[in-house]
Image (cartoon, rainbow, N blue to C red; front, top):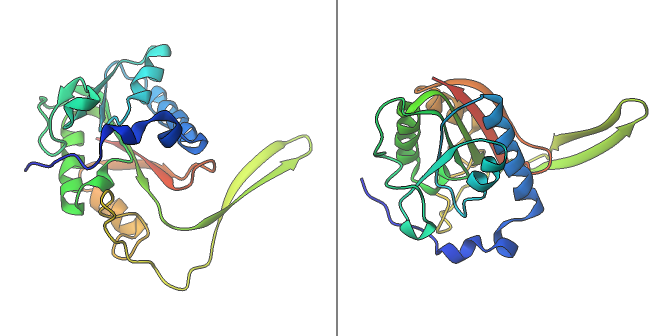
Length: 207
């Protein structure tokens, strides 16, 4: 199964791509990975490569895989047929990438991520459920951020926009379905939406 790149590398220009919210997501990516204490990490679909660059400053060795050689990944190849042996990496991750594949193909790619991982898979996916973001400061306790779901009259239908084939909490892609389908290959450890960027939902899986 082969795919072509969706966007030109110019989309990753700093001022266009790296919003404050996305930087917060990179922090959560690093936080989740370093908690697992890996010696070898594979990132699938690295985009501009910020995760690898920042990870190196804290001693995390990250290799990258992408089908677009212009992005200069360490390995050029498809997410649905990775050129690695079983259990080649301690942690395999993909952030805001799997939704760029048709849903069935994204499940194949996730299965490949599990196959080449020794222990954990960490991903993030777009979550379309609207929320309000709140912050309160409680004396002697500190600042507390939290999300409150917005009421919806109906579940929106996702239309392919040239990049995303599907998103969580769009019609036919409920969170329960995503968890059920992805959990066929690995055990879900945790899932959450960062309060700083709730459009990115994180998942940590264990083989």
